[in-house]
Image 1 (cartoon, rainbow, N blue to C red):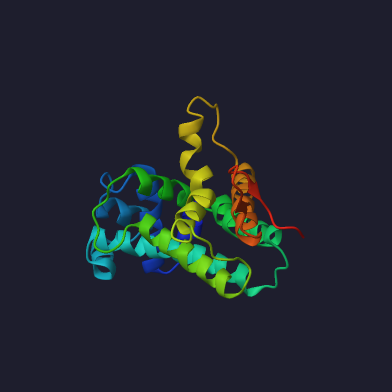
Image 2: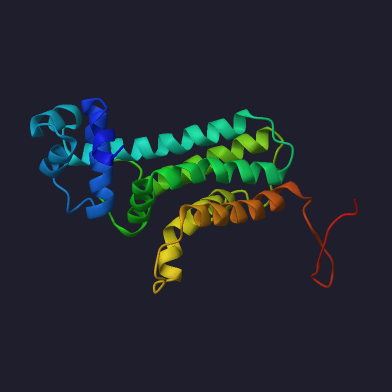
Length: 219
């Protein structure tokens, strides 16, 4: 089924939102008009404004849909029984990687959100993602899966960077690479980063001796 076929299967409001997500990710917010969105969604311009009133409000709806997709993935991971930090990292990377794999427009949209200053009321997409990482870690702290530490305020930003860093910065790190990293590669890199974070927060805090070397407590 083509992307246009998928759009035609949805309700008018969802078709408009998905069309906006695609065009914002490909053309950028500033270079996309409501008329172009209406044309891609196969609806009238008046229906777009009826549902969303303005391009700014439509962008907020797109942001919310992107956030909701990750919230649902994280909810699924935290609803199952996980016995180790490795399992948490693997399942989290798999769930978030599924979105990255099957929805390349989300990957590109998030990348643009970092490098474009887009006017909108309320929090930016990256601020919303940071809040989601904060809430996710808080749930894992409460469940006893991970421990809090002195860097608790930094951890949500660290999790955000480790989760989405491969998506956001691959093209900067390797600007001359012939092709962008494959979804499988991005998923593997996401897993690698999350494993580092989960292991750090699941192990006892190091004791630093007089020589400055970190020493773990004996098992």
